[in-house]
Length: 133
Image (cartoon, rainbow, N blue to C red; front, side, top):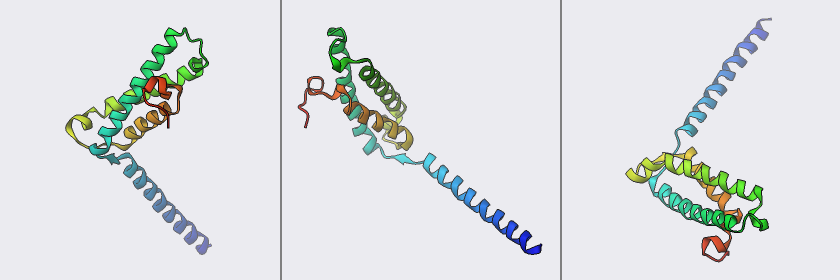
């Protein structure tokens, strides 16, 4: 009986260490930052793809949403990415202006929005002004 109690006490104490380690890792991830030297080019890239998305929207309006490229799911994806990226970029304004590190989680949101826009119809060469490679 004493052995069972000892095993139970040891397993509970080791389980507490694992929980503490997990909490520490979560805190490290939450406090992770990205240097301004990385944030500024990413923000500039977002501004460029956002401009292409704006031209995409104007094109779809002029064409009265008729071309397949202007389908509702395509437009929704572009709008969602633009909103997410704009929100993330705006939250990193302090980093961009002052050259201070930005939160890695917010930076990752903007990078995700850039990726989504690059994979959308808004990245077509007719909207970006750059031939696709």
